[in-house]
Image (tube, rainbow over all chains, first blue to last red; front, side, top):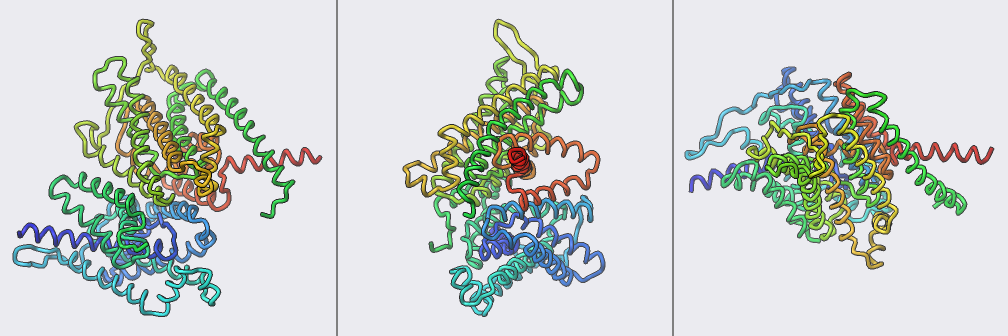
Length: 284
Length: 342
């Protein structure tokens, strides 16, 4: 019983990390329809920016926000210079974002070097639940992720901007005719997705050793989170998808090895795709 | 839409000219390559067959991308599976037949894996963008499998594979241990694959694939089983990549998990994009030239070469959708037209 509870806690914590990592992607994919293969690189940039800021004695949480803003700015620039010209050619945006990955990864290597970096955990220690010890920082990440997701949902469903974005997704032509500035809305959403990716990279940094390919761990997994959960299902889709891709790995790994678990999860995701290509949480 | 009928006519004519031009150019290229051991010799004779096999890997993607409009980010998975099949078959103690068996198994393994994945996805009508992601995952799965099954594959350390020899039964055998012998074994195979694919691309099958690329719904309405043809094309591409991987493994004497990895897989996409996504010769040359340049320049400027490659990739996608082959084609066209006018 205690094992079951501790596994459930572990699975939940990992689910939240995956949801955090995938959220920026879910925004960009779900709202502007760009398959951002540069997502992993954006996470990496967030992690390195955070590392650089922490090394310059900036307090951790301020460093993370600065990193998010930095990556968001880069995302805005990238959208303005490149992506906005290709919204009607989704396949080319996919290749272009892959180009973003190639260039950004090399720049990271040139600027920061290829050796491993560490960001010290801002919340060392553990929460003692009596029968199980939860790493404090992971618990904090879980709560923060939930808050971020809920906040985004609030913006999406309750604010003027959210209404505009939803109108845009439902009927772009009509929204444009009604005077919505489509180009600007797309730009803002893309920039916000990049900001979230940078923020996530910074927040994940203390849990891992950082190297120039760190974001790649999350790239394919984040995509499966979004696809399995259902595109455009920002809150429920991201959480459910994260559970399937991240949480279930922990559970399967109980009965086998980590590697087998990862393979099983990928295969599971492919099977889900086959029978529900529109995602688990999607209506249509 | 702004094309006049005359212009369109000129375009078709130019297209045909470049098709026969492609074949002539390729023939000259292969003839020149055949001279390399006699003229240059040394390291080039050792390394060129490996680049040519990368070229075959690029063509396996070029076939999918150029004809069918399908992009796979997992070609390296098949390449690596081919390499491991070759290594395992040669270790298994079938004697001189092991190498042949390895080549067959490699092509079969690639075909079966691609066929399964293709059937699964295309029959569900999965969109091209999802297909990219699944193939990306495929390369991760294969890489992980290679790492985890270390008693078979040697794990991270990789696997040693012998050079094969050509055994003709009672007639004796030719060892490919010498680089020149291996060179003259692999070059004609690559040429054969190129001309075979070229013929395939103008065959009925090729035309159906182009039809699917241009208008999937219409092909379906005409009664073609779109998912069948797509699956077939992907299988063929997997078989080709697996076969190239087997030859690569026996030539380089080595397979490792990184050969299946995401980075190598996507490198293939970069080769083909730069070479020209709609030209087989472009894909072949892209694979050979970019991998050769990568190898050379990464020893000269290891920090900046990859960055330059990334920038070239983005510029090609932004400005020359047809890659360098398309650029060459339009230059040749313009030249031809000025000559005709003057």
